[in-house]
Length: 493
Image 1 (spheres, rainbow, N blue to C red):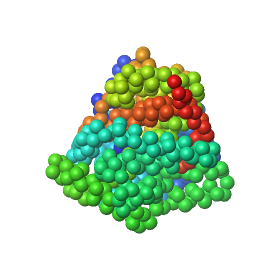
Image 2 (tube, rainbow, N blue to C red; image 1 turned 90 degrees about the vertical axis):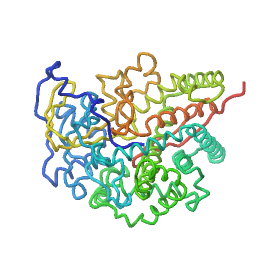
Image 3 (cartoon, rainbow, N blue to C red; image 1 turned 120 degrees about the horizontal axis):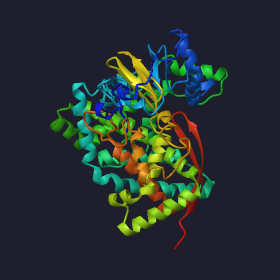
Image 4 (cartoon, one colour; image 1 turned 180 degrees about the horizontal axis):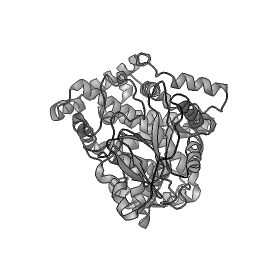
């Protein structure tokens, strides 16, 4: 679902703007501190003492700048160089999409690269810079695989949603509540596997264990970037030592990964045949890329995407629910079903999905290493980036820039309706601008259009079936945690 970021044409190249804006050139503020103690200090603040958003807010206030230097987790001993130039505004952030200025090699997870044993010894497409020879063939293979299955996107997802909603209703009826994340994970894995392998995973040797197998594989790779959300006390120091001193060894999940690899190798044969014959990719490498695409990019993204969507639509309240229901039911009746044409005519539904992707992007971080010396600008000043410096962007701050968006912290369902569509170029969730296309030669998310489409279908099917709903939400590790408390069924005409 998400690889890393886009092309030179997509960037608001700060150096090209300087000639007209003439912003003052300033040294980049910020102190990374001692090589060992500075990263330790900053990650304790980031995870425990301040929290993620406050960590960035406090440094913006301290430096009076949305561009500054700091350390990002995990730090030593896992990452030898945690120092980054941090970008926190809508003007500077898009330089991370400009692959003429930044290198996207091995930066998917930030300042460290998990062991390649987790991907069969291969640097999969998400780890490659577009300048590397294999990137174009692998990205083309992924785009072709998705394109060949576009006719399945909506009907397959509708089947999964029907099963999910039935289970939600049953649990609420019996338990008075239903935990959405587990049900969503099951639906998401089933959808992805059926999409690529034309078979339900329950009919294979992994049975119903798919989500747990992938969850464990993901967790062991990403653990250094996560936290259980502990309050600052002795336990948080213990957690920090356990998660961020050494990476977890692959042998702990080797058997789980082999099960995933084997079922994709067996049942994804048509996909792998095309990789070999059309794109010249060795079958083993293609299969490891397929597992990564399905498990990390797609399923891993959906683990965050769908609970977040439900959370924000629920919080928007009954007034928006009524407007969505009216638009959705009227359009579906006129169009004769939930078709791509019908989805494109639902302007409020589209806007609600974009607003969610703006206010709470499912992949909040972007990294890139400067290929050359260049000048970057914020709203207020210009700064010189040196070749080799790691650049980091925290997307929720860029897409909640108060100089671009009115009431940026507020979920405004119709923000992108009418004239508001012009603001879509500042929506960056897909590792590029929403107004630009993914191509084999950039790092824009290969599943960009599919993600938006599935989010729309989820909202549509929800309000074809229900009038309104209520949830309780929190956060666990990397994803929103959502529990349904009530579902009000659509009343009979």
